[in-house]
Structure formats: C-alpha cells, structure tokens
Length: 377
Image (cartoon, rainbow, N blue to C red):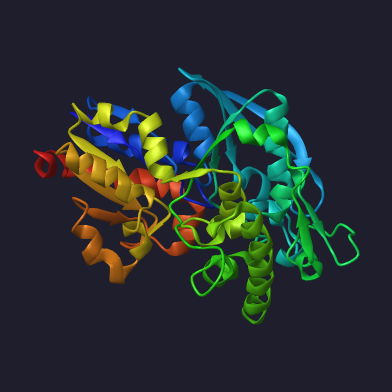
C-alpha cells in the first residue's frame, strides 16, 4: 500500500514537516510495510518557503531587513532555478508575521522589510518572484513595501511620512517617480486564496483587521486611510486596482504587489504543482491531509480541500486529520473526505492537543491505520 501524507502546518504547534513525520510514525505501527510518501505542504502562509525549497532543492538564504517595529531582523527567503531562470521565494510571515509582531501596536507596524527583501533580490539580479502572503500581522495597505521600493508618501508640506497605519493619517499625496525601475521587467506571482478587495465591508481591514489586533472602533478610520491611499495609487495606475480580487490580502500587501503588475494564484495549488502531487497520486492507495483546525473556511480553498480535489480526480481515497474539527462543519467536510478525524475528543483535551501535538497525531494516525485496508479497498 502506498500512502501519501500531505498536511499543512498545525499552526502554533507543529510545522508541516513535523506533522507529516508524526502521522507517518503512527501509520508505521500498524502498517510497517506500507510505502509512505511524506509531502509536507503549505498554502502561501507559514511553511510555504520550506515546502517549496523541499520540492525544488532550492537554496535557503537570509538577509537583514527592517522588522514590523523598525528593528533589524534576519529574514529567510529562497532561490531556485527552473527552465526559465532564477526565482526568489518570499514568505510574508518570515518578515511581518504574527510571531514577529510581539506586543507592538498594529497601527505602528510596517511592511517595509518585505519590500527591502524584494530589493535585496533585485540586487542579486533576480527578476522573478513567488510571494506567499499568509500569516501577516500588518494592515498598512502595502505602503511599507512600496516605500522600500522607492515610493514616497508625503504630507501637505511634502515631508515624508511613516508608511504605517498611524502615519497614513497625514498622507496627502504619493510620489512614484523613484519607483525601482527594475520592477518593470519583473514577474511576480502572489500565493494567496484571499479574494477580498482592499477597502469596504469586505476589505482587508473589516475582514481581517481583528485578527491583527485592529480594534473594532478603529476599523472605519483605518479603512478610510487605506481608501485615501487607494485613491492616490489607483490614479497613478490608471485603474481601480484596489477593487481587484486579492488586493485585500495580508492587510493590503496584495494591493501593493498588484500595483506592480503581480498575478494572483491560489497558494495551495502552486505548492501542490511544485511538489508534483498529481504524479505521486498515480499509484497511491490513500492520502492523509490535515491542518490545525478545520471548519467552514477549509471548504473555501484551504490546503486540505485542494489536496482532496486532486486526490478525487485521481480516484484515490483521502482522509482529513486535523487538530480540531468544528462541529457545525463536520457534515459538509464528510462530503469531501473519506473520514474526518480530530485530535481533540476521545479523551484528548484542547490543551493536550496544543502541547502534545506530535504524540496525539501519532495516536490518531495509528487508529486510522487500523481501518485503512477496509476503507481504501
């Protein structure tokens, strides 16, 4: 029996690589002769860099850039070559992720460091980029990225302002005259399944701001500031880029890159393509995927759904093994997966699932393997 183990990370507890290893250890206890193909995946957020480097045997690099609070941070990025040349892999979570934000105020966080990382790659003669936008802690409309790439944000006196949500309160006009000319010859692919516009009721701030600690009472103010930024930038671009699907990704990082001509692709699909999931499925008997928590959002393009779609096209049974499964979503999930399993339940508390994730995964995987032959044949 060949089993593909293809989870996302269990955020806050295990990387996708460690999760895949734990699941494999549990399967081995019951099916010691099975061929296990470990395929840790990602969807553009945390773990995307590692997944792509694993798939491409690329080079892991670091560069010193500005963190969300203005401090110097060593940010990881990747480089790999394909038939058309060199590609840089940037993961927003490496520079402006929630773990980097600490106790800082979201109104003072900037995405400048991600723009500096892109400029660093440009200086290494890289002109092709794959950028994962998941897991960001920022909500500056991409002002920081654009500032690092040459755009000047100015107040009424033509003085430069800070490219932060707080600084944008003083924004009067934007100067794109010094935008890095190398970007015109660059190719940018954004890895995200977010299709929200930049502003409005479905925009970045209203939809995702609370996850980044934007206070409810500050949402209208910050949304208005991004709307003003969008008015200036859309005028420069000659079109309503701020209304495009994906402009609201990562607190507006999507907007900044769309202004630079980026194309948006679902992150999970990009990673599955690079990992050659379809080829692996051709002789597989069973697929196991999973994530930290599965709920209604899982069915809106998250990685386990994408894996399930590929598996079903190949007529291979696919099971879901997640940290927790929202009760109200279980019935819908069971229409997609050949079995849905959670760590929480059957004597395992949320606290145990969070602190003993690897052990819990091994045990649940062992239980799943006991019924594997009947369920997949």
